[in-house]
Length: 239
Image 1 (spheres, rainbow, N blue to C red):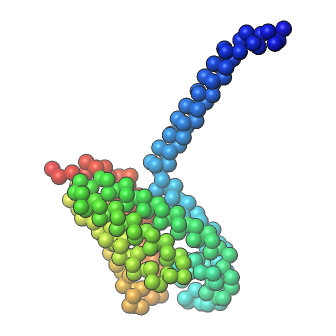
Image 2: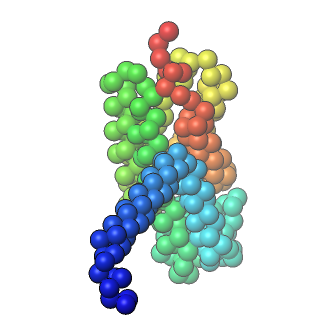
Image 3: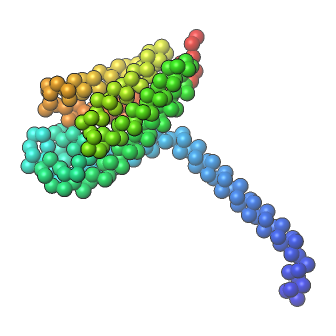
């Protein structure tokens, strides 16, 4: 009896199964599109929070040693540089188990900021300036990631120069808008970045550089978040 029912309703069963599979397929595609849209919208927040988390884990595992005391234990937020987290060995000579967390954080940060430059460039109406922001920003982030490698000292001036060019272009267009708070943030961030580079290159005020480095790092993160989420294409259109 079951065989008779099966053969008589075979076409219906097949059609229903195909319809069910098709519906599931569209549901999965729709879910993927929604997730991709959410990721595209909040990529910078996710990337920055992930970076901070990974760097915090790396700092918690840092054995010790800083520019102030090579025998100190643990990571000293006042005297250690962020780059200390990338080394295979800590300043005190011990193996650094948190290195991989720090490198992963730097990778995520570089990808997130590269995506930011591409995204922000689309808001700029002048094609040439838009391309400068896009491609200089992208290339700068490639070199920025290499800061986490043994090429650190070579990459610092290259990555910093390219990043500053990209942010400077962004700042020029921000100053053409009426976004006063953002103009102030751009100016403070650039000033902090320049001061950090001066201290790094000259050796002056070196004892304050680790703190200044972290302040600059946070200002940069705050600035790119503001540029991404509190500006729109219409802000930069010539009126």
